[in-house]
Image (cartoon, rainbow, N blue to C red):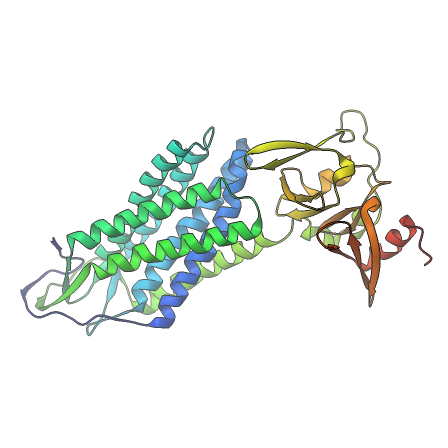
Length: 384
């Protein structure tokens, strides 16, 4: 199969030797991983949220994953070195970005509508993978250079299959993994799969020089200008990755008053104390007795609940749990941590801060912020 990717010419001869900048290849993989990480963290909320919040999460996840895939593709294209100057058609470059974001959003929407069944995830993965592959080849069609591009049927098919596999894996991981480390591992796998799709597709391309080049009237992006556009997109993805990695109560650092005192008892119309704490494990909702809980840690808009032996996912935020758990038993010792005072085993002072050691997991430790050290000591009956 041969296609003139942005080049119209006559008298084709020889084969151009294509080389790649290894640093840009590495950067492209990192961008794909970071985009996947931020998007997967955001996508996890789609099964639990509705209305405007769900739409916002879906849009943000589509932009981060789709934008990461697009940025990875064009950083990979910038890594390509040919003996001729390469420019890029502006319209096709923009269309490729739009396709990447739209198919990602539609795939996430289909996968998260109702129960995330294996059949639904597979169907969404096929759709999303075909869209990602289309983005790649639209991006290749945007190339404006003194060449034509010939494609190998076998490697093109392999790249499409890798794209489908990468999308299906990403969707399954997005709706089945809970913890931050599992999500990071999933993002690495997805980023490597997306990069594998791109470089397999590039291996399918053979660049043939031409003797006569027909000028194009359409606006074109130079590699330097494209590099600036991709860099801005990559910085946005990096920023989103950092934001979603922050604990839920990072903003609480600027509100010491809210952290410095326990929440008042529930008023009329407000939720009361929790008799059981709903948590999730292996797609099963468990109901924990509050006395079983050793510690609670914020994770984005949700929490990780530990009973000293295992860690569970909870859809309630740290602020909600602080308001609905007994303040005589549960103390917020840090903007990201609540502990069960009954499971405290030791307190160690570290300069102006402290660390409290808890029952279970060989004496798991939780940091105590400086302003909360006096409250903790008072609650435990320690002298100041």
